[in-house]
Image (tube, rainbow, N blue to C red):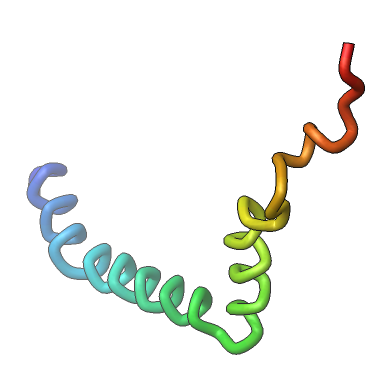
Length: 62
């Protein structure tokens, strides 16, 4: 059996199954309970300062 044929059969069967399982596990890990709190905090970073950007309040006028 040629190397190409053997690798092609492996990719068509076991690697496809492995990658699909990995994809499902990643989706389940992202959707796990409690993860939403962390993602929400990270997503709200740009909106924490309503009046001015973070650096403007601490800068001295020259």
